[in-house]
Length: 146
Image (cartoon, rainbow, N blue to C red; front, side, top):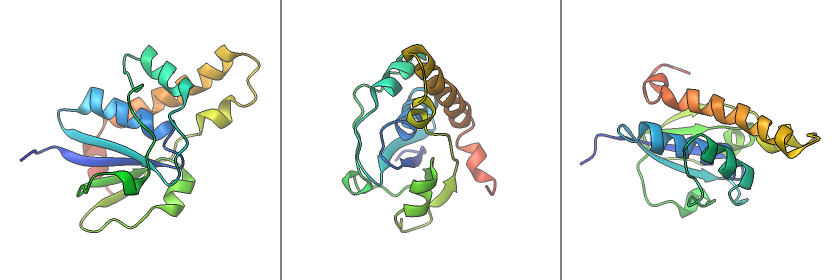
């Protein structure tokens, strides 16, 4: 039996922030975390998120956008909502799961006014880097009351 903490990153469309968090958790914290991501809707994995994660050395191109109902029957230790909508619409999880809200800005919204593709990618990189810092502290940072 694994001692890894099971963590679900939940966002509205499971296209960007939750995918990044899952990718970093698997790549950087896979020794202590069993990571999943899902959405309250399904929007597909964002190509810019895939691109900026590849720049950081993490391949999320094989990850898929999914709903919570599509996940295997997993007893999560933590459910981390990464946006307000997911926090507000977070489904019920039975058992001793700890729910934590850790909001990050929405990269597509930040990039919407970008004049160039490079400027748009810069917004994605900002959020990517903030998510990497957050994930680096897991699971210890979730043990404190948030």
